[in-house]
Length: 212
Image (cartoon, rainbow, N blue to C red; front, side, top):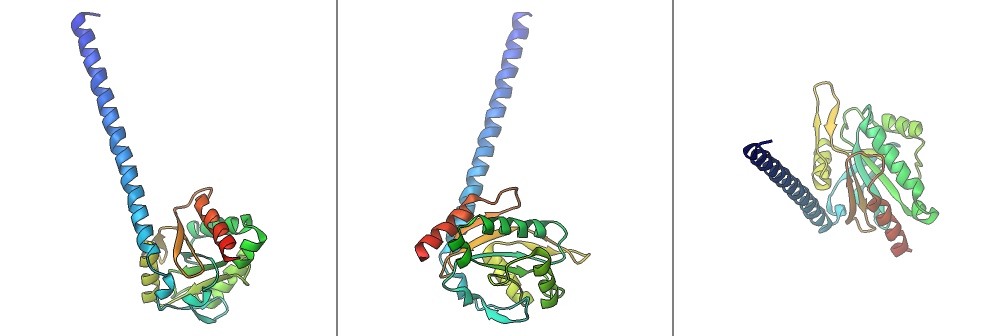
């Protein structure tokens, strides 16, 4: 190889290395920015109790209840809709895995609340059917509906995004949130994965110890 070709090859290699390094730096910055945004959002959520929201919910038994009726218990809260073909069944399975992994004391104290995006179709009867199909512990779990306005308000506070599609389904994010005994956010997991963020289980175990 001539000297000029060797110099060109070296220059090209250096240029590619610099571009790769620059891309890595951009990716790292994007990851840091995303993590910072998540922390900021969580800090904002944690600054006020969810129980300050004057929401009225109706559960699978047709019973009306206020959100703050969970005061005194750690709560896992998420949002879903009953006819969801994939994401919501996976979300429920994730929450069930978290539930089963807790100590008996922590599990006994935990309450689980799933609020529907689809109050028009998710009647108490449909929610009850889903409870039976998924074998949830109805002494601690509630599947609930609320008015469309209350659904939007709760979704905004929890950082859940959803959009109704032309076929009646929903595009939505999958978020699991841990509330402490006074309704303050203590942990949050966003997205479906094989394993839920371990911070969720850790937060629940810590709340169980602190609440004993």
